[in-house]
Length: 149
Image (cartoon, rainbow, N blue to C red):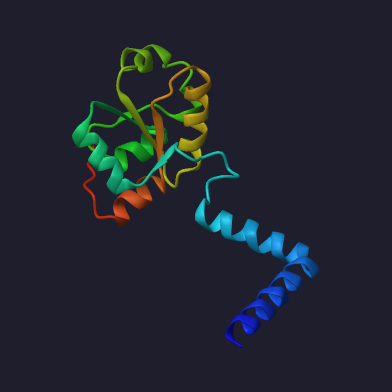
């Protein structure tokens, strides 16, 4: 009796999935995007949390780049960060190349400009480049240290 009920329920589930193929595909895609949220944005592997950034800074040579304006940088920035505004990043390529053996940790206010900077540097051949997810706002929310001038 248990075997018969199992087969009936199995057939009903299969019938439901086949009769509602669009719903089934939608559920599978939605679940996948919940598990891998950076897949469609192309950010996978190029974003790091603030706390993981601290771990990487402590474990390997890093070059921290703040792509905000100089005024924002002076109000508060991550210790040892270098200010290279996004608008002039291609003009500072010599400074960046000088540090090419290091991990590039890039951040801005919220993470949008730093994503653009990562894309620019990746196209220029700098592969060891990541954006700090959420920027300085996430850094401050994680109660990590900042310095100001």
